[in-house]
Length: 368
Ligand code: PEP
Ligand code: MN
Image 1 (cartoon, rainbow, N blue to C red):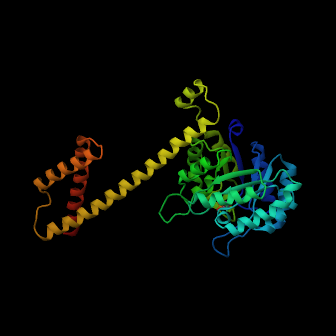
Image 2 (image 1 turned 180 degrees about the vertical axis):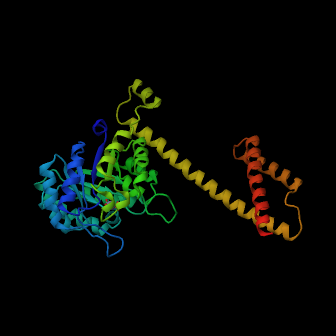
Image 3 (image 1 turned 60 degrees about the vertical axis):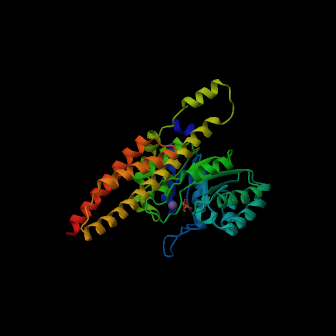
């Protein structure tokens, strides 16, 4: 597949469930030309009682995957014992899950367990997922501990962040955090895990496309041969056929005019990536500003409704021409001092005011 020449794709089930499931899924994924298979052997579950993974027994199935396909295999390690069992089984790509990255004691224990193996195993690679909270230092701390142990191949994986705010996604992406990490570690590959951001397979493609637009280096996607029967994360796993379709659909946008200009000017290095990512960072900022504007507007309308109630109780008219005009003039003046055109501020305030009035009236008619 063409896209696999440009980005790194890691795919595989949330968890190993049975030999049949692992081998069947791996066979389909390998057919697409994917270089790395992922599978959780030990699953960190938020609540007790869920499927916690098969454990060490599953490592032999993953060895079979490595032997029967060209794929390397990655497993999640949360303890020193997981590291030893995996490396002893010839599984050299390890990943730190979000819950583990959040815990420096666990990360250090893992780093210490990896260190002695580096003498004889040069293939050890560690993928570090972001912590649960949007904390670039905590994420960097995990990277540093793994680096200090002597690991040279480290990959960052952005899987979104736990948030109290309601969102259509399971975890909010907060792309700017991942992009800040890229600025800190420009040489480390940066992957996006759209499955854990989405929580629902219907959003995986759009999140993946967004990651590629931000020039991420690849994707880590949950894929199961029969997603609906999966013992963990069933709603967010793709079937191998869905993965194939998505990889056909995804587009890697080539040079922006800015990049071409720079190339003509003879600039060298990874400038394209940084430019596209910077634009992404700015867009993220715009999204956050817009969200604040909308929250403030909602707050303003609530206050206007309270004023409306007061006016009603005191038999005052809802609309007062003089107050309206004074308000427009004051806002235009305030806006001008902030560098906005008076014309624009007046137009904007007219729209806001009319919406407030509409709400006062409707609020009123609901009550009467
Ligand atoms: C996983 O990749 O299956 C997993 C548990 O992810 P995370 O650590 O991102 O929640
Ligand atoms: Mn999962």
